Length: 316
Image 1: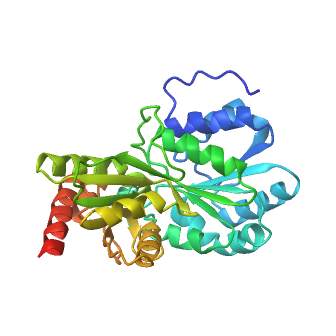
Image 2: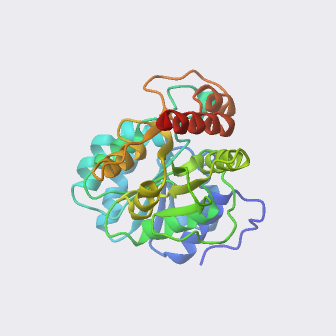
């Protein structure tokens, strides 16, 4: 057991990571110089002998984790999502994915939620990197319930995993499981259901608010939340999509290589066409994340308008 640290005010991820340290005596946190941003300091305080900060050297951190995994430890590597996906890609592919080592990579500040730091820090293509690597399991939690599920499953995986985190703004969750494995039904529309909405990962709050706006306008929608992007669980989504008149996918990632593309491909095999609302294929300017959500049409109000327009277009 680690040292007893007062954690009532600690961030959600910091507490989840500390709990993993209590549950897994062989867990070692490898930090790439981002202890504050990645919320690893609480783990460091509780388990100083199982915490290593290698500085801003992501490739080195991945190589170090590879060695730890080969010695029976469970390394958990932390950095910003785009730094892991871009700077350390070769080491991840050759030293982690190829030998199928049990290494957990945690990428923070995904998508546009590190907006003030600008396009050098935006991770709009990290899922394309990790979903393409053989043997990787990929998660993107939206709240505390998802986070517990993702971290627990990732630590149990017999191979490498990637967990994609939104910077700040993760809510605790309501303590209730929403059913399903990897993909959960969050909101069930009335009968008939006009539209099936699938949200990938951390835009759950925006998508849920949009669905409630649509309900007030008389448009019933099923809302599914994808927590595990790879391997993808699509059966419940497929059943809903077959009943509804339109299927829409929402994601804080480029359409290329992300969860939206994976869902689109899976549904296309069953003859179902979808509309995708994702980040544009472009470099975005620096700005407040809420402003960037509005600019890209991914805030709740814009999503409700776009879903309604897509449904009307489909009916025309």
